[in-house]
Amino acid sequence: MRERSLQSTHSIGMPFTDAVSSTAQQDDLQLVAASKNGDQDAFAQLVRRYQRRIFNLVYRMLQQYEEANEITQETFLAAWQGLPAFRGDARFATWLYRIAYNCSLKQLEQRKRDKALQVALEAEQGNSAGIDTELDVHDRQALIQEHLSQLPAKYRIVLILRHLQDMTYEEIAEILTMPIGTIKTHLFRARNLLKARLQALDNESDRGT
Amino acid sequence: MRCREAAHQLQLYLDNRLTIEQARALEAHVANCAACLEELALLEEITQNLHHIKVVIEPDDLNEQIMQRVAMTAQRTNAPRFSLLRPSLAEILVAVLLATIATLGSILQQPTLRALLPIANGHDSLSLAVMSLLHMLTTVDSNRLILALWLIGTFLGICITLVLAGSEMRSQWLKAMMERLPVR
Image 1 (cartoon, chains in turn red, yellow):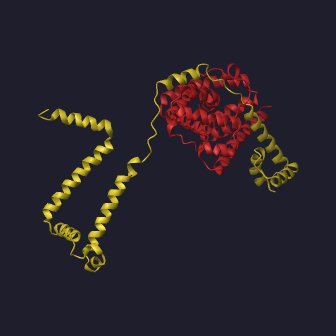
Image 2: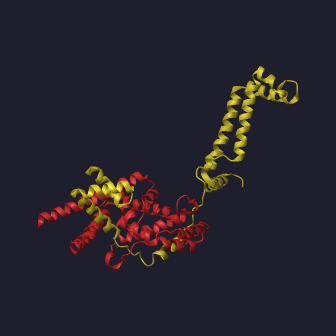
Image 3: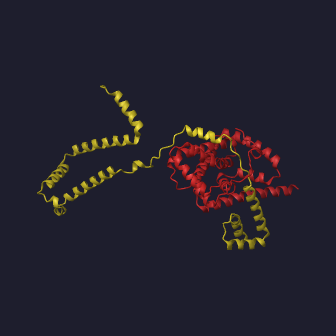
């Protein structure tokens, strides 16, 4: 598995403006109802609607393009299998995000268990990070992105959902099944970690000059 | 407002989670505090940069790959959880019947309570039958009673095991048992 150079070839540089509107929610309800009855065409429409958002969430959690591809597939497959049990208490999107997050966490756990793979991935990441650092050493955004990928998973996910997927505290709390107070705390700590790393970098460059 | 409090509120401010009063108080503090202003600028830079992280395009054939796997995968049936622990109507009726019999049995053993029941005055055929049954149960030989309870318990145990094992396992057991029978 090799990570592809995403920022140049795969980025379209636009936010997820097709965030779930009330019309889309209405459509979701109909498509979900049809999918629950085994309608694969309806499910294919749901996949098309959410695949980019889910792929991006998974990719930012795992930082591996091919792995993100596999886990996105696993997410939708789990959703398909579990649809009959989906009672509609939460929105379909929230439920789907929750599955994606859990699949990503499971994959991260799997990585930890498989030490050989971990070593290989780290070597690969180390190589690509080295290239990135060389290319974007003055690019603050690239640095923040790199630091984001190094944060603990529980802090990374809140930043991804809040800033990359433009979600509210309430939506994040629903997806992660955590109280809003915990979401606030995790966001606070996550940003402080990023801030501390940037400050350390600034101090280093000040000393260097 | 102190810097410590302001530091905590800066992030909520950037997320628009403060009331107007709180936001104004924070702005007034930041306007006069260079350290908090610097902190706000850094946090703003971080959130702006995070917001502008580019969207990654998924593989072209992602939808196709997902739907291929979906086509080969059956949906899980929506069996209610703990269904075995939820009694059916028949089970509830049996439980109520057994509880009624047990209660009646204890009442009939007390002469004062028995006198209150119209059916159990000891002269009609129903109460005579009930009394004789009760008498038989209370005077039965203890060895026979234990044997009867053991047989009932074993039968119930087999039934419960078969119910919990599921239809697939039941059919396998039945098949294995039939193969061992000397006469087919």
